[in-house]
Image (cartoon, rainbow, N blue to C red; front, side, top):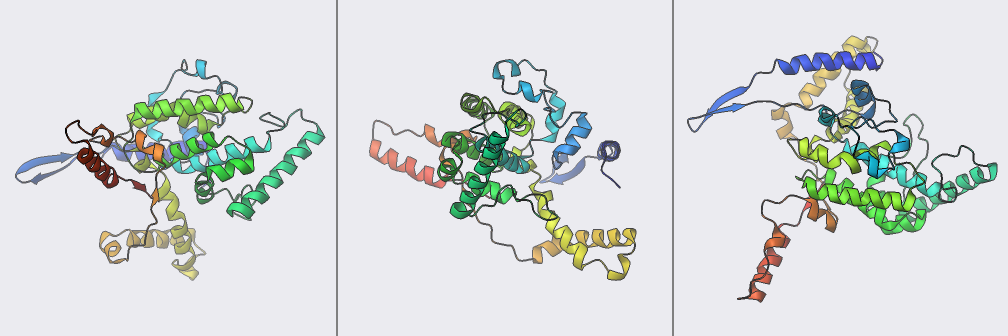
Length: 355
């Protein structure tokens, strides 16, 4: 079945009906009655699905209906009416990495032209943009091993989540190669890192940091229209964080995207060859394999893979909500050296990593 706006709305209606029929789970723990209710959020979806469900153009913000020509006007942007119901779709932080990457790249390509589009540009200016693009692509490949904006046969472009992550992990080198402000790249890295970290964020501090980042973006590159995804996170990110019951990183579409390679492997190796002539039988075999793979008993028998942990940027710690703020443990006047040592130990214990 082709994914159209009508089919998306139909499937969403079916899903909403099933959710409405969910009953609370009740049990007893230590002779106490416990009731668990369910709140489901449709966050593991892409922009196409969200735009179809909200009736919004892909060029508009589905939260405030802001047009591309209005996104750089930060003074008037606050006056737009916000549909809080649309916060249920989250921020899609995984795909946001790619959009932020493309934003930086497109700015760097057009630094000489200083225009969002090449409409009205001369042939010489267009050639200069292509030359600059090729130069940046070569430098990123030779110095950082990153292939960006390259067409991949049967797979879109080379701009993947891993490429975007490595891109923002080297703000100094990227700034030297692209010519884009290093502070802006570093701020993008901080925002993307904490959104995917899974930690609970302080929405007030995030709002201040994101607003300052948006102002820096406009001050440095006001000639470039802020992309919808960048606008959504910088302007509405704090509001979305406030409305979610869980940390925004736990509602990422990462889990679903990670299943794509599993789905592909099962489809290729675990659906019976003779049954591939029938889509129904192939789908049935595939669902059976997915049920087997997700079984808790079988999952416990599987050896856990090693996960490489990466440290959060230093300024990201200031945006995380701690139950007890380490920074408030200031040395006392009675024994400053001893208190300072204890504070340093606590900071080391609170050192955070994200996956």
